[in-house]
Length: 127
Image (cartoon, rainbow, N blue to C red; front, side):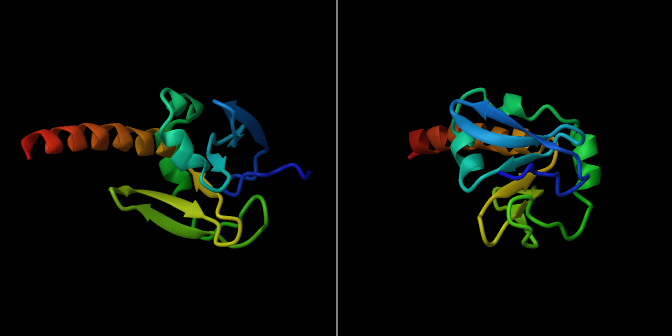
C-alpha cells in the first residue's frame, strides 16, 4: 500500500486507530483523512474527538486552499458544507467517498452531534 500524503500541506499521514476505526492524520498540519463513512461512524463514538489534536486556527488557514486531490485515488475532491453547521467546510472524494477534515473540524463536527442529540431529546419532551 502506498504511503499517503496530506492533500493540503503534503506532509505524511500517520495511521490512528480509535475504537477499531482507522483514520489517517497529517503529522504536520494535523488534518484527518477518513475512509468512506469513517467520520459518521466515529461521530457516534464517545471520546473520538480526541483524534483531532490540531489547532483550529491552523485548520482554518488550510481550509482556504482551493482544489485538492484525494490522498487515496488522486481524484479532485469536492468542497462540502455540513448542513447542520454551515461554517464547517470539508472535502469529499467523489470516487472513493473518503473525507478530509482540516485541524479542528472533526472536533467541531462531533460537538454538533452532541448538541443535536440534546435538542432532539428536549424537542421530544415538548411534544
